[in-house]
Image (tube, rainbow, N blue to C red; front, side, top):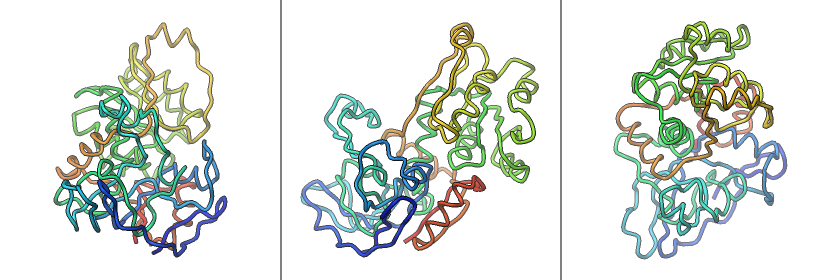
Length: 340
């Protein structure tokens, strides 16, 4: 079978590899249909793995597929059923896993496609515990965006930031995969949405998703523009995933008692903050990584109800290097999907 494999830093090849064995008890075998790219794929492609890994490595951290076969004792799934897969090998037995906080697993075996072989292969076996059914009416292409893009935003906005109807929110990088989702999810509950973009061509596109205001951060300082738009009050929530370039500005545009939730650092992982500002303004800062299996199911339900991911590009597996280069250029609007 084919597997998209990182053979060395910045070199991907489609290799022929042996197919997996028949699934064991409690396992299902999945035929992968679509893989969605994320910045974690770019990090892995550049060699930025924050744990030991061995190359060659099958890439892909987010994907959808269908059940090809089931092992003994599997009752939740049947052959041909569309599914998505959880992107980390969690233990299922630690307190966090038992409480449904899968992304806080104490014994995680690694992130698929980053530390261990990922989803960009035609067949793989997984524990049925880590597989989520896809509702009727959700395509394989759209479903591939649920395990990271949609569920990460679901976890950030509602589990962590506790975003409420009618609040105001600043969404950074509104044209990105998670930025587009954050705009849609926030607008769906009646929030006032301000977003930043890096190109004027994206302004009308983010407004079409529901953004009330769009700021080209390459032309205008977003801090000043947000203060003007909110009459110097600031926003209730900042959706942060850019990192060092925007972090302190993001704190400046928060209301007193406002919440900042962050899941990324594409512009750099380190910054300094004014601690007096932090405690005097009573800011609440939430770090957010990944999501729970529950968040993925919630995201799929939103897709089934009509909230569809924005797709920038669909490309065959043979052209994935160009797709990753497009992600690095920051010219994308939405998600890139690799199909088998």
